[in-house]
Image 1 (cartoon, each protein chain N blue to C red):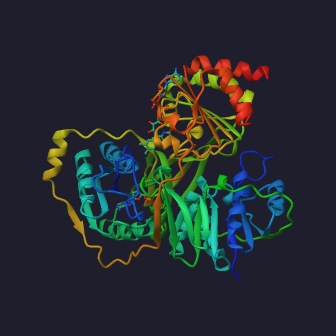
Image 2: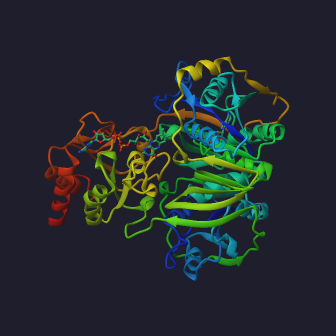
Image 3: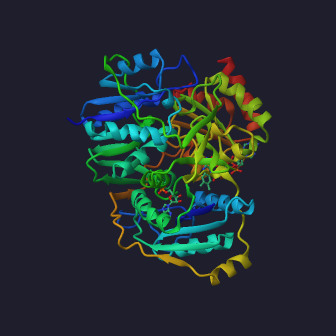
Length: 317
Length: 247
Ligand SMILES: Cc1cc2nc3c(=O)[nH]c(=O)nc-3n(C[C@H](O)[C@H](O)[C@H](O)COP(=O)(O)OP(=O)(O)OC[C@H]3O[C@@H](n4cnc5c(N)ncnc54)[C@H](O)[C@@H]3O)c2cc1C
Ligand SMILES: Nc1ncnc2c1ncn2[C@@H]1O[C@H](COP(=O)(O)O)[C@@H](O)[C@H]1O
């Protein structure tokens, strides 16, 4: 009997955290095949995570690979585990996250099938729309394989409700591959919402000038709006912002309700990461800056004047 | 340690790409091509490992039509010891690339294979992981720092929300993130010199690497509706509140 297997993800650094929003969104994408959907939970996982996974609307089974070494899952181990489970599935997918990007191509090659990266639309059981050239073009691609392996841009789908009642089963994981050892992990974390699923993103570029100014100027506005902070690659490379908040082709892809870009030139690699936002605001001193081409509301002005004024105006609201 | 670097020649990242008239592929006629940016990071890192006495030889390989040789000339100008060209189809998907590269690895026997984390044309980001699977070697993708420790590497790689440090036994396959290094500029005399150097070849005609993915259409994404310019913060707030309804 064929079914769909989705890799679930949750925040391992926060004991109270449940499933990532991207997992709930990917469940809806997984329903495109009209086949039963199972989710795979990797590692020891908290009761909260397992409970939430069971509640994912429309999910048939939660497979729990309860093994210590999967707490920081390595591609070698997860690909082998998927290979072991694959006989029961005709689709294996994950959100386009660092985990799935690492694991799924390795699994696809073991299964000798091609793979689709970052599907934006699922048209037919083996036909997809996906971005190429940093999202400047869209390709409609067919994957001939009997086993479909893919990642999806989760934000394209609406998160499913947590009102289901899936069965929980434990699956045995193959022993850890001793040739790759987890050493450590450094996650930025913090008070602000997660960038990839935030409702509002306040983003800044190289023109912020320093890490201190980046925080001092944009921080209060982000707090006021309950927004996540984002940055251009130039700002990250200059050390003004941590690399986990880079938006763009090689950073995080975001599609919030509101994206505010301050001193961002609008290079195509940056636009690739934010042009699906519902409303874009751009503030830039250069009236010809590319960012204005995707902005719903543009303001030609100095960000160092605009941001404090905007923060104050919003406080008064 | 011998290092093999795989590079792809792609449309230069500054070019504004367009669909071909038949809507089946991207227009490449008369378009400026360059080495995939992430692959340049891979070449640079291999060269630095050699300069630091950690690597003995750096060999670069590129697959595709004859144009791929231009990318290899660039690698020679950057300073790699030797280059190998493998004639292949233009529309290789990542699995096909991995299968062809496996043959190159068999022939060259490197201890470390470096690729880019993704080709900026197809944006697949798969070939390194697939090659590692086919070789049954360990992998580390999106690597931003490498330290050689005897027969293993300590690597830092970029993950969502931060970084992860792994210890990986050799032989291994790694893919380079932009943050790994800043590739050196190629000086004109080096480029002239590279033109005179030989380009080795490998015959891959017998390797079965038929593409598994078929592109039916390439099109521009729907354009965003033109926006407006506002003249003050007050006007912006008013629009966000009453017109866009996002505040
Ligand atoms: C392979 C590859 C991948 C890449 N991936 C990414 C990616 O994922 N994300 C990304 O962002 N970039 C990426 N880049 C880099 C990208 O090409 C640009 O270099 C980068 O986005 C530019 O950042 P910026 O807008 O901060 O800087 P700049 O291009 O330097 O622009 C600064 C802007 O600030 C404006 N400005 C200056 N002072 C003020 C002021 N006081 N008030 C208001 N405006 C002001 C200027 O008019 C200008 O428009 C990538 C590049 C490559 C080659
Ligand atoms: N035709 C090719 N020749 C050599 N290496 C390639 C080729 N295509 C892809 N690669 C390598 O594989 C990496 C990832 O490609 P991709 O999976 O297409 O994103 C690239 O950065 C290159 O290092």
